[in-house]
Amino acid sequence: MGKRALLTAMLGMLSLPVYSAPEISIGTLYDYLEPGKSSMLKRVRNNGDVTAFVKVSVSEVIYDSDGKPSERPTDVATFSKKGGEGMVASPTRLIVPAGGTQAARLLYRGSRERERYYRVRFVPVLPEKQDEFAVSEEEREQYNEAMSAGVNVLAGYGTFVIVRPAKERYDTKLIDGGDTYTVANNGNATVVLDAFFNCAADAKNCESPTVHHVLPGKKMVVAKTAGRTYRFELIEGKHKREVRFGK
View 1 (cartoon, helix red, strand yellow):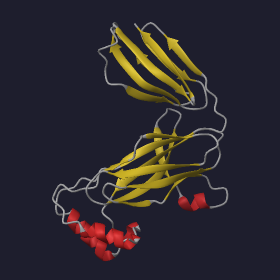
View 2 (cartoon, helix red, strand yellow; view 1 turned 135 degrees about the vertical axis):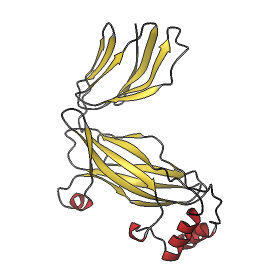
View 3 (spheres, one colour; view 1 turned 60 degrees about the vertical axis):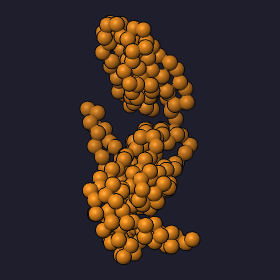
């Protein structure tokens, strides 16, 4: 079955009850572009019961001297020119059938002297004329009418992409103070505190584990509570080690 026929068949099945809606998932919410690699594939799965039309956008995340982030959308025209740099997604429009999967390739070009950060968003939309989805006007109207028959919330998701520097250098300082525990990143690449557990002294009554990222030049300070123990896996690139502390 050709692409057009398949899409028409999917749209033709949209005699939808009010609860029908696309429901996308993108896997991990943090991704890492390792040294020596310039691209990666990000898969989008539609767990809903109707086709998802997904727009993909990329913005660079820039931190000021106080650590406050701001976003700058990628200028595709500048990226395409000689000497252009940044990250782009291809394609920027995905048609994901119910129960199906599609993928966008994230391509980075430019300097790797320092670590860089990007926010990639995947947002389901009702296709409009200007959205450049490969559907006819009739198919677009049919889909939108079916979707508007009920109250539908189109939830989007974003992943945070960390572009590692070409030459990673890890220098993590662990400082166990009286009331605090500090993880200071003196290297040039982000370190991850994975599966961070805050537990009772018996190590059985634990809060839900969390994940923390400490950027280069930054630190994370944990306020210790008497009678509690803490543990996490410190990830520095390909190297991992378990860390425990308490009060």
